[in-house]
Amino acid sequence: MNDIDEKFEQEAEKAPANNIDKISEAGEAAEISASEPESVEAAEITAEAGETETSEDKPFSNAVDWVCTIVFTAVAVILINLFLFRAISVDGTSMCDTLQDDDVVITTNFFYAPSVGDVVVIRTDKLVNSDTGLYGEPIIKRVIGVAGDTVRFDLENGEVYRNGELLTEDYIIGPTNQKYNGWVETDTDYVVPENCVFVLGDNRKVSHDSRDLRLVGFVDENYIMGKAIFRIFPLGGMKWL
Image (cartoon, rainbow, N blue to C red; front, side, top):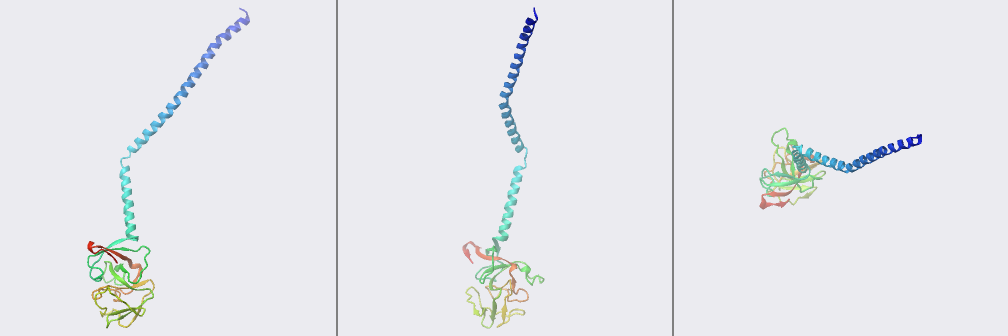
C-alpha cells in the first residue's frame, strides 16, 4: 500500500468517530433542551409547595391577624369616644325638666365652640373646687354666657339678664333667686372672661353652678367635655337637645 492509500484509509477511519461525537453532542443538547421546561415547571411546583408549607408552618398567623384587628378596633373606639361622640349618664336633678336623673345623653366635642343655650358636660375635677373634694364626676349644665358677655341677676324677681336683655327661659323650674354666701349678688354685672363660659342648671333651686363664684364660677372652655346633642335613654324619651 502506498503512502496515498494509507492516508486515505486513516481519514476514513477517523470520519465515523467524528460523526459519532457530533451525534452524541447533538443528542445531549436535545436532552437538555427537552428537560428545560420540565425543570422550570418543577421549580414552580416546588416554590408553590414551599409557600404552602410556609403559610401552614405559621400556626399563630391567624391569631396575630385577630389581635391586630382587635387593637385597631379599640383604638378607633377610643378616638371616636374622645373626639366625636360619648355617652354620658346624668346624675342628679339639676337639669330637670330638660333632663332627669339617670338619663343618658350623647355628647360631642368635635370642632365644638360653646354657644349660649348649649347643654354641656363639664369636668368638675378641673374647677376651682378641686381641693374641696366635693366634686369629681362630670356635671351637666346650660351655657348662659360666653366670653365677653355680661351676666346680671335680679334675685328679688328671680330674673337673669345677658348683655342687658332679660332671658326668656321656658326650660327652667322656678325663679333664680337663691342667695348664698360666695354666690352672685343681685344687680351686679359679671363679665365672662376670655375662653370661659357661665353655666346654670335648669332646676335653679337645686343646681350648684356658676352662681357659686368660689367653687364653680366661670368655667374654662378647656374643661368642657362636650355638648349634649341627643337623649338616647330612656327609650321612650329620646329627643334632640
